[in-house]
Image (cartoon, rainbow, N blue to C red):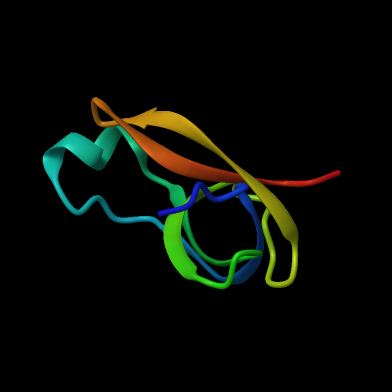
Length: 76
């Protein structure tokens, strides 16, 4: 077991414009990203609306529908 650095590259991005549940309706639109972590694994998470494929990003956690979820933002 190892701790990931949080650094990654955006592999794909999808803007969610239709709420999947009544609880998520207040958050629409939101961005879901697929990222390749520098450690070699791929994961899905929330991300900034400004992200594009190939962007270098870093992870943090943000509240979403009462839970903390991984959230990626571009490294400037």
